[in-house]
Image 1 (cartoon, rainbow, N blue to C red):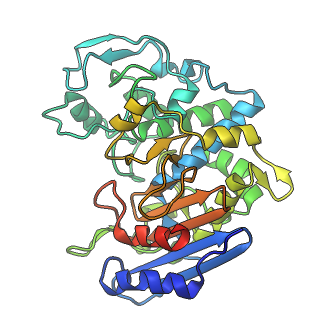
Image 2 (image 1 turned 180 degrees about the vertical axis):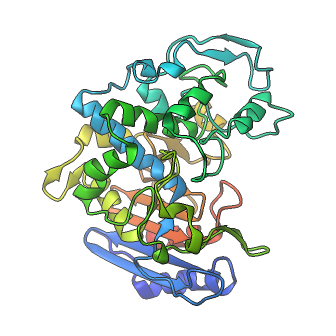
Length: 389
């Protein structure tokens, strides 16, 4: 068993980025086994009035995806869903799909889907829908997505004015961007999966998460909204011009959202997410209670992509990453020292998480400044070097 860097070492590694103005503040956590070290640096906002604290709440954006994947796998183990089952039983809006003949084709230029979308297609982001990097002029499908305000094709938006059923109705108006199972297309699969989970479970997605995951793991501050907005850090789209993305005083995360986004909708704290990380590192156990089988956890942490799909997933995936179920999987040791076999994911609003089964190490960093590209800012890589290098 290794030991994590001390709180003092975390401070020494990360304080220069706060001093340089990369973020107003941060909360960093490194844990190996039962030894957990935390550093809370700087302030929750640019005005510096409220210091960061260990229990500061952050919008964790795409770190929601692994939670959604776990909920789906629980329903698979219950026999409610099956990985190879077509989703159209639960989501008839996505039955009988047509597929663009090429990503930049007009919406009328389609061919029938070779097969139905499956549950595993959603888990692995190979459902045929997701991010395309380009302009609406180049890709007409992007204009159609924007016109419908569809979640799962860009940054989160907790203020959308539709619910899950309307989301599926709008999505069903569009052709797929690729044949099911063929291409890795980021993020939309988790939102579709969230609707599928709610319909299959007969409960709102937030209640499934709460009863099946958050309550058993003691994740008391994690959900699609917080009852304690005073503990939220101010979220910034950028520090250039002090552009506020979400203000705790009038936060969109202070009430249940119309559409609980399975790809990017949650708020959480470092200690809550550590509980989730440990649950996966311990093979699906919450203390003595088994929430998920070791086989399901192993499948979640295994790369399911072909070499061509990994290459096509860039720039979201790096050259040393594959994709499991809701998490990126490190396929080769990185420059920061993250070992092959580690898994986790980042939240584009300023958070990151990595876990290494070999050493039982968790590294978590939560800031309040959005990423400017899929490549995380240097402060996140500094934590990885401290925890793994």
